Length: 390
Image (cartoon, rainbow, N blue to C red):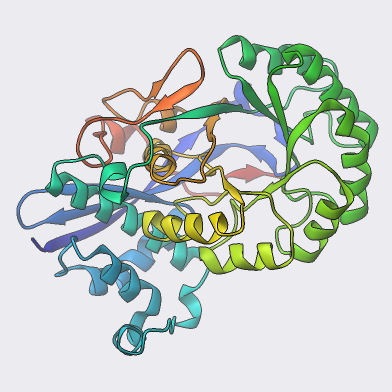
């Protein structure tokens, strides 16, 4: 079996004006993704997805990665990953046994493009084997707890919003520290208190700062909200400040989660070296695809750090995240978006199996287990411009 074609297709999902709201990242006007397709000489087609600017990712796939992927056997998925990661130095890297990545490939949009290609290769590989991806990776479970991820309502309205997630059956929910009413410590405390009131004492509550706070503010907020039994405080400070995140972790009894904007196992090793993390949240469409997620799972489990994959994005990303969760022994929970995301819920012919108790179940079909609707590429045609309006 040989790969004969590699494609990258930019996609967009505009947010209607009546569904837009401002967050710490700005006002989201659309969601972008890049669909990756791998075609083999015996008729298999695999799909993947990449984060990053779609036109840039597409250019990287077309003008760099395709030369390293086309002609290879997808059963040699580790070889293909190493070729993409090391680039022109792939052969000496494999001969010597140590990585020698080209400077541009370690992080950023090249790694995001690599991630998408890797997902598509695993889809093809598992289809050829006639089994779901998670079984090809090495299954540890076929279902996992899901948590409802959202929580932007201002003030006491957070009680109804988060309570609504619990009413759907989720026994764990997550809210943003910065609501639609902006941020201050008193505002955040009021919203978190309201959320706990809405979900009751038995539902887990997580909070997410999107890396928007400085260290001292994050520590002050953590101390203020410890009484509400917070299961994790996500990205309390800038994702570049591993030392500062370690300081936050040492100052609070709340577990610290992060990782959605990190790349490869090396970034997670650095987080752990700074004692800055309790829950690792790699994004399969950014951190290196399914190949690298397995490695991240291994290195984090060695230090008793749990895994909770970041799964906010397109349907392909969520599908790949499901398989990653089912094949990672230290994964204990999976993100289920509650935002406005048609490209997540209306991209495939098949429905995701998210049950009334909030659990997420793996598909039993070969590969990723999902197929694109006929109108996908037309409906989600790429729209130029930034995702956020400032």
